[in-house]
Length: 637
Image (tube, rainbow, N blue to C red; front, side, top):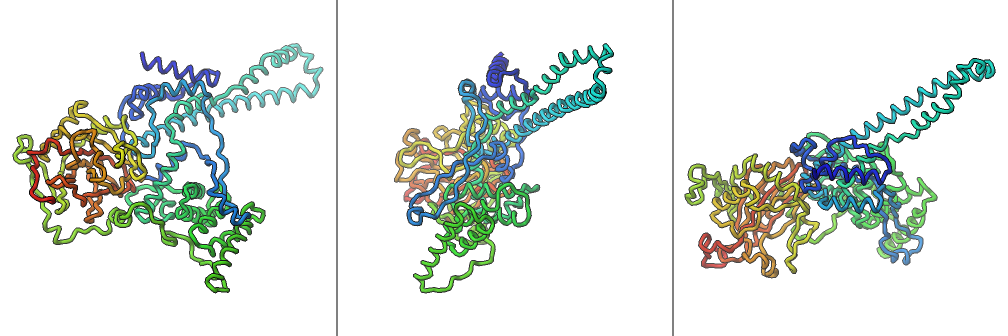
């Protein structure tokens, strides 16, 4: 009954908008809408069966996000007028105004928004949710094919009319009086002009696009937005930096662990460069504009002009401090388009600036620009806020792991029965040492496949952008250094969650009564969580004050998927890297027995290069552990 009401409501909204009858070509659309309103989300098809999660290439994810959103530019804001005041003829490249997209009228949009309160933004932060866009796109393609078929059928009918009337008029115009002398011909002329031409007019006026437009209207609510495209582009750049991949490898889709390639066109590379340029990220703007130019020079088809690429590239190179190359690129731009509105002024500005620098260095001869193409390593990547960036990213690449033979000899594997816990006596856990100090262990077969699928099923409709706790206010907020979506599950919601919580308690010997809820996280395109502490430090005493359960004493992390490339958990302080393995779990203590934080446990989730990463974790708190993990005699016991 409720679904029927929602269907009627949606039909009326779309009918009111288009003032025509709604023609939905895909029966799954209505059921998807009904389930979304109920809060289930888009993870079931119209038959109600669960869809499987596909392996995901981040390059394909970015292209899908861009396709669904529709290609359009944002207005570019000039960085400052200061440079122009220093040299009035110097002009910055400016992006074109975005093309207008079709939307529902305001009243219809208001009505639809009342129903679609559960729609979630930031699609790119969760591969699990992005996979549904693949099915959405498939449905739209099918709808588009049906529209094309309808247009072709209409055109065929009109052609048939035209051919028949062409033969008829050829005969009638040869001698009109003789033709009309026959009464049947006279009658048929009256009939054609009075009736049949009106029918032809109605046929021509028919709009076969109604069904396709209606489907687009229904699906558009699930489309990624401009922020999603920007986030996906930044994710590719993050992967490029972390794993030291040049733009050409990315452009050709040559990524480790990938079994099929996805390519970036000239226009894709240009858009990547523009995204970086708009963020004043000239380092990546240079890399991607150079790649666009390289593919353009190789003869690849493109829509963007070479002048536009050179415009952005020359200015970005100038911002990187390479004046000779900026002059060479600008001269190339002037040679292509001598009337370019910025090229001439920029060239004079660059040459004047270079001349000034040469005078200051007492050099009279200008060094020619290098002939070597710009590539990864040509310019130094700017420093950012993270002090251990190089160590962290090196560990993500498998570099700098401090696993020596002496340390490896101290690592063992064993059966763990939780101090003779009755639930583990007959089937003890397989425990492996991952690191000796601090002690990190991995448990094999910590979750079964059926448990993993059930947890994912419960979590998917609730996935929302993962948050971090503000150290000053204790309030949860989103952050660019954590790119994933998460959901929290209570033990009372399903026997599987209760069983997992009990298993964690049995394995660790710590009570989970004061622990936080089971958190499920799914990482998006280039999903990561940069180096962080799980426990609160002395400078943030109120971080867990509202919970009233003390600090986070330990972390239990379940890996719920394998990852083809990337996605390791790394500890920059002591050089450890732990790789995801489906069904296993890792455990470590964040606090010493004294309650002091173990600062060595600062860790990170490396960006997912290829694959779909699912994890769940349990943060165990101090309260209730007094007799389960007694205090030590020294600060670092």
